[in-house]
Length: 321
Image (cartoon, rainbow, N blue to C red; front, side, top):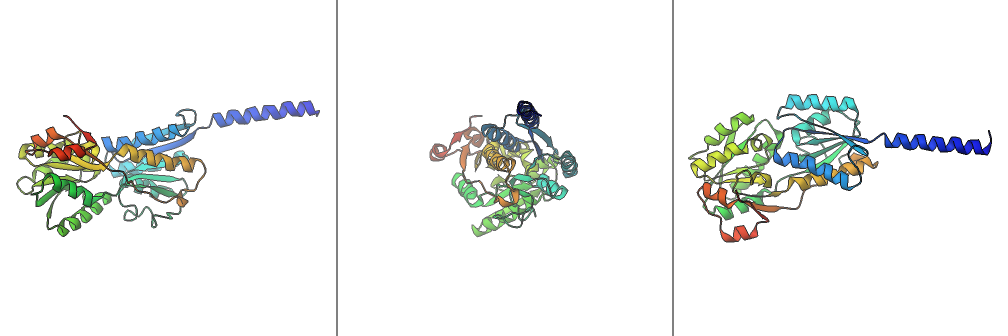
């Protein structure tokens, strides 16, 4: 074979390899336990971050995305399906989805997001060195700051109500910590259980006459039906506060919380590192630091209170609906 022929053959091989690379976008499979504005914002944040880092959808990366519709059995089915597809990374949004994916694979890289207590949920044993095939972003709530905000708006509140799903590890961990912090302030937590979204309205109604304010954590079952709690607050003049800012536009009085879109952006950065070749077990689990105060003066009025001017002035966003 002449040197000219060899050059032709080598060039042809490069073209074949280049075509192969172009035809082989990375595959990111995303499973989330339920659809609601906060978790949907996480998914959008992931996609936007990867796009910003050069992963054009279709040519550089393709997405598989499914919601379990708040059903853990469905979440397990999605996890097994994704593992069978062998994507480059599986992203699991919220604790139940993360637990099902972690149980389904020990080989495919897994990035969890919007998980409150990764250690308690047995996703990792060490936040700094998670090891194995998993890492992610925790959204552990700054409960003391949330209570400071609630009491700034309603300083006479003594009995704080909440609705939670006792079957969700994420929710139980938060409620236990919330109860401890309220006791330290000589305040009382009154709990109402809802194991599915259809039970949220009844649970919220059970708090009527028993509480001075309602505080909602990031419990996915409850946030999916936040309007039910808000309707009770409006009828009974009970101010409803939220841990996530997205719920303020749905009618909560205020929230000092994360912007879950930013949580998604942070998650996307971790996914990008793994797609670039890093081992997920070497990437520390990270938290979210930035907090934003969102207020809704009209919602406050519907729940029988008035937001002080200084509270409104401190808000990053004032919702008008």
